[in-house]
Image 1 (cartoon, rainbow, N blue to C red):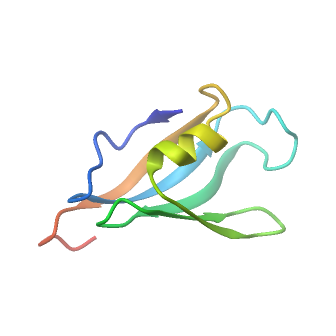
Image 2: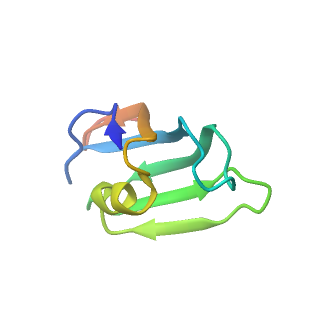
Image 3: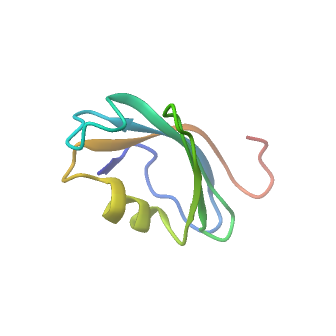
Amino acid sequence: MVAVCGAVSAQRRCLFDLVRLEDVTGVSGTGVVAWGAVMPDGWVALRWATNTASSCWYASLGDVEAIHGHDGRTVVRCVARGGDADTL
């Protein structure tokens, strides 16, 4: 998976779209398949944009990549970034 957000650390928050370039499973389709947020402590919330929507928590963006990256067929597209004093 390619992170278009750039580096995201525990001090940097990021709101992102999970964009699937190729759907290898035939389940989620292509395009924006989920919305996510990286929390200040590094945890990631992910909400699936499928007909049967679900929400999941991951310990890191790396965990999201390991589970949902599909060998580079998925990208994280940052839609907002911020530090401790920034408003997202």
